[in-house]
Length: 115
Length: 212
Image 1: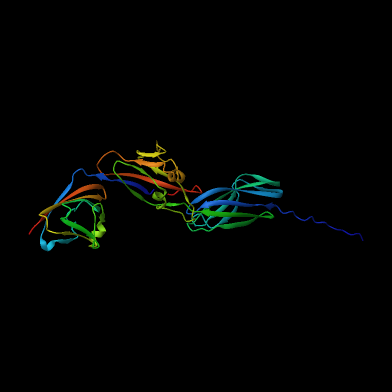
Image 2: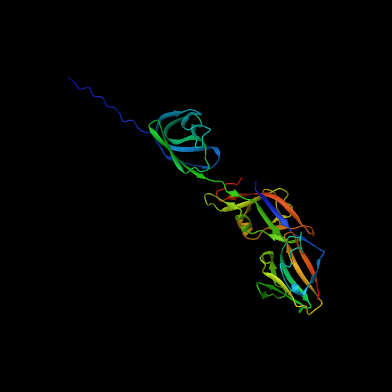
């Protein structure tokens, strides 16, 4: 008989934290999430907050994104998502919620401007 | 000289009605075939008497029709036959006709296919109750005759499955109407860890045919 499988997502209690140092020459980053979330099989990210809000901006297909907007793994692999860090602030914290194939995650990006 | 005249009475023909029988494609089965008759004049059949054979038992399309019991056909009544048939997966509807005594027996044979059920994988949120939708099943269902999906059944460890708020019993048929009404649900475990729940399922079409 054919299989009938339910895959019940887990819920990760621990946050994922990543530290980025961004140099002026790297102010605009494409495919920023490659390597950050290896092994977590995440396919959707939702921007929860940017602190301070003036430190950087996410862009998808060249259009500035607002907090609470989301982007997909395909957006990243297609090179359609980038972050521009303005280097007006020495550091910033980005919080995202992420949806993986088996769990949800809270992701904290600690970004430091290197000048 | 006198005239010697013989009067030869016309022989009455026994008449048979047309019988109908249905078989499932891709199977070998024996089905009863009851045929009405009239103008019987005492024709006899004996139990297991073979009246018709087509091909051999190992051939797709094989048919053998036999009498079920000893019968004497007088006046009107029903002739009880049985038909064993090996059906190919592509058999089309057909008519089988053969002579018996002075009459002709005609049987219309219709065919239906079993539905095909495919594997289903559904992603469910943590610690939530999932309400199944018809598309969860129809997306993995097909039927060569175009027969609609009528019901599904789940086998294996069915803990957590509910129908109308009551624990589901393994193997019970759940109608598509029940699913459409949102009454077939799965209550996920209250835990943070990811897990998978593995079962198997069957589909039943509107003619009562069940998938393999």
